Amino acid sequence: MAPGDDKRLAGRKVAAVACFDSFGKMAMTLLAACRRQGAETTLHLLELNNRALSRRQRLEIRRIDPRTRIEKHAWGDLRSLCQGMPGKVDALILGLDGQRSRDSFLQLQQAWAQASTRPRLVSAYPGILFRFALEGMLDRSGADLLCLNSPHDLATYARGRRALGLESSNAVVTGLPILWRTRARADAPEKPSIVFFEQPSIPVHPLQRRFLCDQLRELAKAWPDHPVIFKPRTSSIESTLHRRHGEMASVIDQMAKEQPNLRLSFKPATQLLSRCGCAITVSSTAALEAMAMGISTRIVGDLGVTETLGNHFFADSGTVASFAAIRENPFELKHDPAWLAEQGLVRDGEQRFIEALRERISSDVSPLGEGQIGPGSWGSQAWQTTALNNGGRRMLSTGGARSSQRKRHRTRRLLRTMRDGVVGFGWLSQWLRR
Image (cartoon, rainbow, N blue to C red; front, side):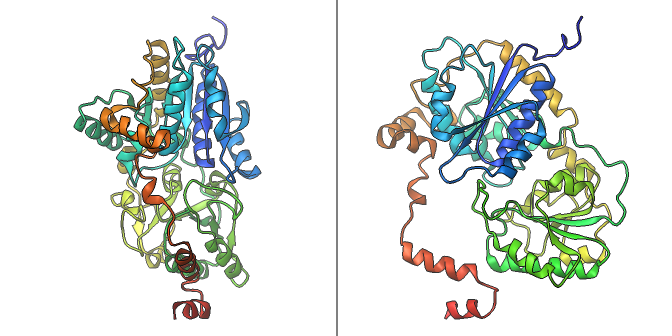
């Protein structure tokens, strides 16, 4: 037997489509696993209007697997891009948020309507599921293979499907893909850093964000011999899936001029974690990476533990702490390894994914949906038909949420945004609140 003949996806072609950097990294991680098993792989980055990925974001995606080809397209090219895939591509990974997963399903249903076979659809998550978890999983329920992070996520998905009289056999627990090849560090760095990992939309209020900046400055003062690093989610010119608040980075940058061990860094999280002694966040997935590497991890508890903050996900992890407690002892390991194993760290996750994908590629495949509507977990046939007849594909892909998001009272909203944007920033805040 020649080398490589035993690879489980030898001779197969696997493609992925992705929007946003986090989904691009997840899709590339899955493609890398497929390529190592002999598949030919391609990543199609679909750019949205005015939300193109930056060069830095594209480089971070490419770094995951330089041997996988990357092509750039516009989101509007999805249907034409995928039209010729049946018979040529064995599997298509959807690295998309929930709404675009729905939209792509409907577009592919039309694009592949006349094909005798089609690529198997795969969907997975780039991070933890702490908000709208069931809704997001049901959005993706049309996939042939739905990769879930934990047994808890699988139980939630199965419960939702069962309530609608549907089965959930398309879902498999593979763990969080970014943790598949993460291993504990062999040696602790000398004078390790303390890193705070920002999120684009958490916390919501500017006063809360200013509070975090003040606490990081105090932490830097308490540990002057250790770098205290603020890792922004993105730079001010880069796009994210969620609304982002950029002022924390600028505030930290100003504070750093007076506190020499406080600094900003846009290096990839994996690089920062290699020298990190304590990882701090409100609810970022980086916390799971840090725990998997055996790094002391702290989830900020000063603002409470709530679904809005997302730190309720970590409530049983043993890592929730106030900044006062963090200042006292940042470097002691606190996380519960059993909790981590239940919430995304699946050591054989890559093997589970490859085996599940191989099984689906080798099995007979049915057409996508029936009657040009989506899976039953999107609603009854009567509702989906009504949605399509009255609002078209967009109404069905948004689940009817489009009307509630329509912009109203633009002038009032602009004034409110200006006021909220400066809360906690001195006399300007006080003047605008009068």
